[in-house]
Length: 539
Image (cartoon, rainbow, N blue to C red; front, top):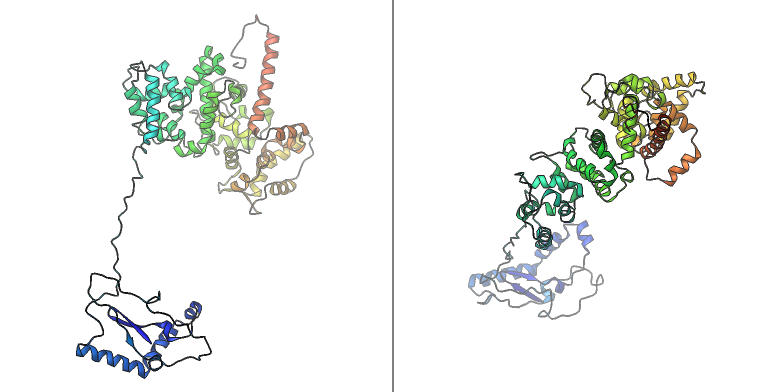
């Protein structure tokens, strides 16, 4: 048998021993098998004689290693070295092979030691350079993008020492890709010295040097609108762009003769923005909330659309008209404040006293009005948007807080019954067939399908498309009756325009009604009569 000596270590070629093969599964199931085989080999007489001969050679200086440390062969009879420990019938013998060409024979590689070491030489670790991934002022633009931007800037500033504010709109839209009504705000942001002119270098330093070029559109708008060192947007931050929108948009030109209503329109747009986007209800609009909302898309839409009423999100003048006229109808003394008795008349006395009481207890939202027990215009905007679109997320949260009497985050049958009792009494007074609460309770729970059969959570309501009708059942009798006897024509309209919200449909119907009433009043008054603004709607 051939035995190869590698470096300092003598080892037997296991393939030449003709031992039976063992699968990895067999070795895993019996981890001591290899140790038992090795112990058995050491106990053989031939093994002992071999070890003694090797030790004697070492003592006499006649080592089996040559001066170069290369391996040499020791001829040992296979039959004498290791008798067969297994039945020869268990596995067929291996075919003869040449040791020089066998891939199993380990050959010595030249190394730093003369006698070769069994330890492998570990190469030095490769130190990789990690590119910078955090930039305090934002990631700088790539060279190609920077060159394209500089080319566009040079084109707009060519032949000018600088751009004045009335010349800056094209640069805002073409270079910065911002809505055109951001031009004044952006101009003042760059012209910190109020010189009335922006040079090319000033623009490059702000837009490219400030890394606004690489920001997404929402972050660009957020950075331009917010005050220095602030990490949020306030309502006042939107006034400048809305004033420019009122001054430049063709769909709002007719308001230029009535500055007071321009201001009311701007206020209404801002209140609607914060109602839908500022879900934390802190009055501070964060960048995360801005990105999650649809305000940026609405800004781009209103910048491209000449008909302002086609921009249903936030900017529609018809929507503002409906909100303001509704408030004007309830505010009989026109002090721009509403009390409980005023609000109870909303929607032809549709609401119950108990729900109005909850609203004025400021449970769903703290009033911004400075007068105790009075609701201001901003508070009314939040109310009417919630009332006319109860299925929207802010609307669901608004009314859920009202019904949740103990504030534990769940609506129980007892809480629902407390508000429905007044509904039941009103049905009896109107000679309507009363519906017992037991039947209503089953209908509500079947409609929502809550996770827990004993109560309803806000999560349950948000997962149900008919959740807004639950609140109508509890405190709005007119809408409850309308839901029970739904007009097939209205159902078909909803299916034809599934993208319209409940608020969109309500505002459209009310605008038509209000405009028709105004036309009738104009016809009855005559063109020569004096218009008394203290008794008429403000439009």
